[in-house]
Length: 211
Image (cartoon, rainbow, N blue to C red; front, side):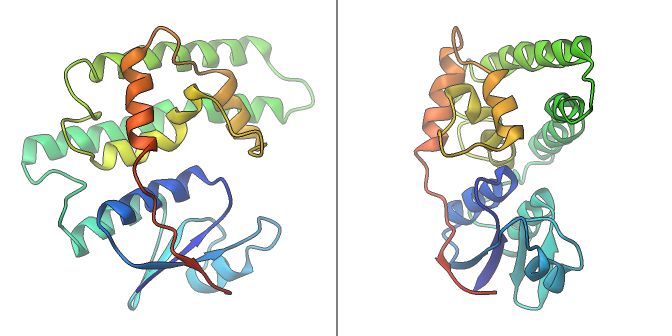
């Protein structure tokens, strides 16, 4: 059985939960508090979630976990077997991680400073809004970001893009407030429908156990 170390409201943990449910894998989870990361540090040597224990393997970083799950449990695939389509998914994830996430991360970094650069925040927010139109166009002729089936691209993007639909009032994390404030599905019906479609899919967190 896979053991998943996770934290409440974590976008990166939700990526893994979507993948685990897609593959119908049995899992138990260890829910940590951000004030005490020792369970994660003991098992992985670093403090960030998600982390999985899969037999004798320990894997951290959400994208690395998606790749591990697809290699060990290939059916149904998260990464296409066709080389061309695989490159498309890999390129999307690389862009999302290195380019897309830089905008909300930059806003959060500015808000933590004694004096924020409002021009930088405005520019980053404008990029986030403009990129939503890219997703709207991607979804013009397909149900998911890279085709007619859920792939790792959807798992990677959904937990962040879903805030264009709004935010659970109980979720008060600063980063998630940024995602909520600077994204909107208004005028983007395909994006809204995709968020609803993925949101209706199961997530597999399993039974919570003590560390």
